Image (tube, rainbow over the protein chains, first blue to last red):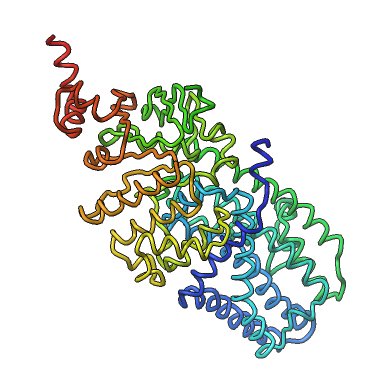
Length: 272
Length: 252
């Protein structure tokens, strides 16, 4: 068996064991569960109220107002998905458990798969109550986006995992000194992803850079759906293509950083 | 012994961290079923050597093989047949002892995990606190849990890094007894890094003494005592650590 094939081979039992580990942790700590919900809740209330204010005006802005709360909810999928991935990884560093995992038969691909499962689980716990609040208080039903929501979700979660995988690799190599990246890296792409405004608002020279980011396609797609009632499949496919490239690049970077950590001998002591 | 027949084999193993040499070309072979101590002061290279044997750290040069697999390249062929215990890692604090053991049983592919955990709980006297969060245990209890975790998968190769550090003499003696029994029953190969000479004299049939990343001496405890003309391994250790042997040889 080659080293590469060993690295990517999968055991559902080991992935299940890791998911069980994080599930036990979540179950034992109510502040961790509250943390998943409260910030998205604050966000949806803020943006929901702004939307009500905008909707009181007639014409284009009344229609565009609905995109604000939709965009906020979709951004939270991206941000919370990445945070769910990265925080699960950080839990291992905070617990000084990484050495145990790295010396167990757990493969890097299995570890990443378990973190992706946890990212989804944490997202469901955090976002379902927020979707309900958005519907109950502001009349925004995310499921009314229909089939398009599946495309939006898949693309955003893929982007969040790419960022999460990259951040985890950096943490492996550089320790907890790089922890702030886990909380802030997603915001680096926020202005260029055009979450709350169309790409056309950006200076012309900046627009090509914006189109290098998969979330840009999603948020443009959301606006097209809500304002023009058109589903832009071309945008979704563009996002999917870019996501495939970024996901592969992040996985490659993770393996390189893991290899570098093995060379530097930093896996045993993953502190500051 | 050929490297293939050895349970653990290192050949001219070197590890350099940013210009600092932690391990400077060590070679040894441990036969299956043997129990060996890696002895040395702080910074002698014990933990780095164990990390390279586990495949956790990549050697700068030289080779390591465990149960016939080259480390770290072929580590996934043998990691399920190995285990370790180290003070440099902890188990998740919020998880109960049972939950932690269950997770690691899953990672190591232990069949009938519940039965194995029950057996270890009995052997290591964990039953009174098996459903308590691991973070709330005393250090002695934590060490017992950690050693129990290291035996979950019936390892053929067991690496122990100061397994009784910070334990009171009674608990330390108790842990040594359990390790001795496991080795006798399973025929596992054990490599033990320790500062504790009593532990080494009691458990080990061979002692490899490291100093500044090199093997300074390698023999059975009895022969080391005879050769250094000392009564205890602690005195031998101090002779090596303080360079008395070289001084004596130079004087002669």
